[in-house]
Length: 182
Image (tube, rainbow, N blue to C red; front, side, top):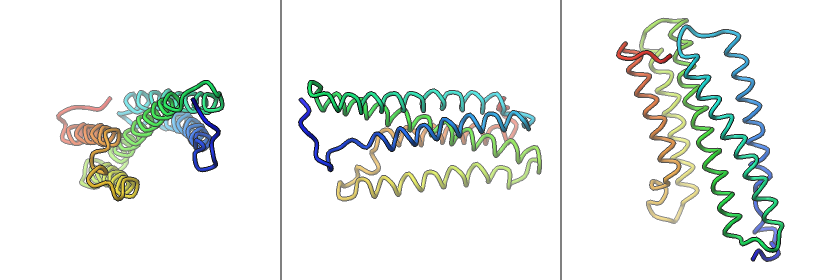
């Protein structure tokens, strides 16, 4: 059963609901803007990724809202509420990962159109993703400080980084003409 919560125990889902809602608006805006000036390739992949991200952000809003609602019920166990919060966190993270990958593809494809196939075109997605990974590692170190090597064993963040690394692999293969990102 959930006991009366102190200020320290309150769920922080309202901020996540707000952030997820902002991301929904951002994704829809980005989709509208890129279709106004379509790159020669990559629009299908980027649209697919951003559409998936939209679904994950909507799920994050609804799941966080459910967690907030459930937390107010006296008959619901804290464990169940935490499961909703965890599900919402994974959903938000996966949506954000798809946005990061979409931006890497989009930036690469637009540069390819505007400056051609040169090292700067390939450096953009590499630097972009490396920056994101450095931020994730720093966040994990701060979040898991004092917990040994747990900062490097965060399953969800590792999955997200692996997906981004795979995307970077596709970009490199596209750059060298081995595959074409549609």
